[in-house]
Length: 228
Picture 1 (tube, rainbow, N blue to C red):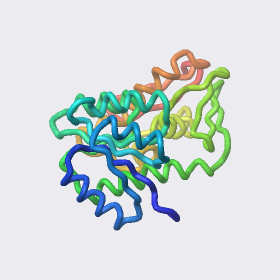
Picture 2 (picture 1 turned 180 degrees about the vertical axis):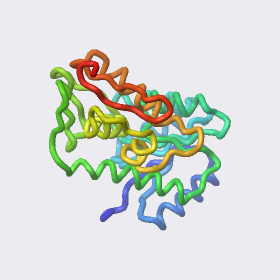
Picture 3 (picture 1 turned 120 degrees about the vertical axis):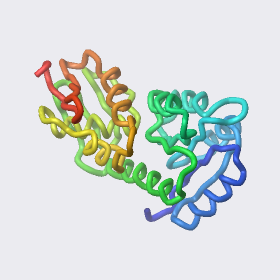
Picture 4 (picture 1 turned 90 degrees about the vertical axis):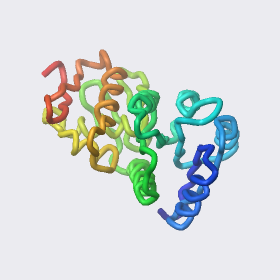
């Protein structure tokens, strides 16, 4: 990263944000902080951020409520912070458009690695232009998708998932390979992030030119055209 990536950390834990901020500043990031959803909305409206780190559990309006609103107006990547026992929050966050999640407590090095993976995905838009399969067109520069002439609202992670599948159309892609290509990290034990992203993509591409994402039980997924 030539310039420090701007990160908005939304969390009401003052000690945590201080520690995270110090670590990120020392590792090539420019962090800013919001202790509530209201403060985060104000900062997001006033400034540009490359990525948002958003805690699910906050007093008042939750991180999930804020994420839902953000996704209605912005495609800024979001990394959710969830409690270890709250599996439902992870799934809901991904379904609402979060790009990835990290479970508390976490190592600061892991947080920085996840953020760099997200930023690498964004920088990849400088690659080849448009990839087409059937009536689906994937614009790598804009990280956008069109199906039958209509824009398909994919998050960054969802776009990377469908692009990885499209580049291997007709061939099975393992869940681990999808995670490495789309999320920039390996899957951990009981990690269902790829499955949730695939489920979201299936729903958004429903009825698109006969394209299907089929599950290969216990292995991965394959994108097929016309039900093949």
